[in-house]
Image (cartoon, rainbow, N blue to C red):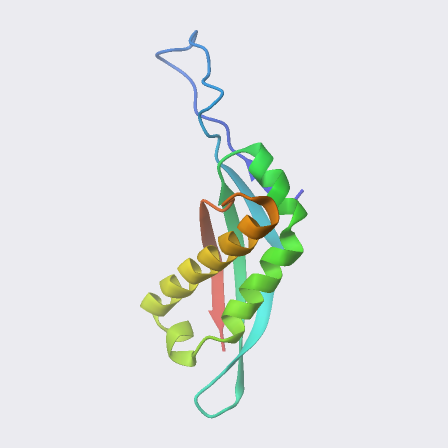
Amino acid sequence: LPFLALASEGGGEGEGEAVDPNKPVISYFSLDPEIITNYITTNNEMGYIRIKIEVMVNNAGDLALVQKHEPLIRDTINDVLGKETVERIRSLKGRDLIRKECQDKVNERLLKETGKNLVRDLIFTNYLYQ
């Protein structure tokens, strides 16, 4: 399965206490396969970027919605990456700005579809460019 749900850690103090149903249980959805797309370099040549992405959500309900809308998420990220400059793609600061822009654009499009900001964080676990 392309997702992983993490439960809160237990043990020690408070073993017998009831679990708060409103407390978020962080879950992850892996966009698999990796996203590979082109960008334009300074010489008007094509470069490519390959990114492995994990999407963090607050609960299992949001995880199901993210999984359902995976094609929309992939399209949004491809749109963002295809418009990036070589300078941004190749710098550490640019990489973080791209990650944040992808997260914002994905949430914007998912909000239109679901009425919710589903993505708590968007994590690049692999980032290669040429």
